[in-house]
Image (tube, rainbow, N blue to C red; front, side):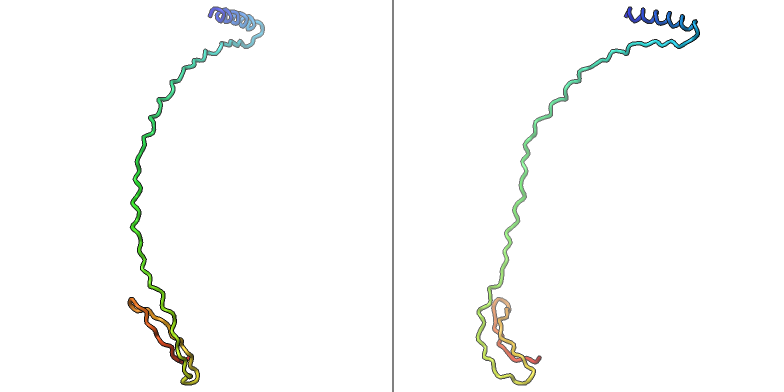
Length: 111
């Protein structure tokens, strides 16, 4: 610290003498303060992960779909002579009624 003090005195003397000789500025520089470095403690360790039991949702109940059985094979219709002009033959077909299949015979229908 004595070196800094003697430097300050020498600078002051030189500065005053220069100030008396025509004027000027005196610049006194001081060394920057020392940097203090502190050790930062590490963060506390995180707790270990806890195993969690997650229950899966129950599966949905099975879906039961009841479908109608396929109709029986078509029957043979006897196509008669047209009863008149502008008539069209409508072939026979199976119709589902309730739980069973019923045959509707073919017929001539007007156009």
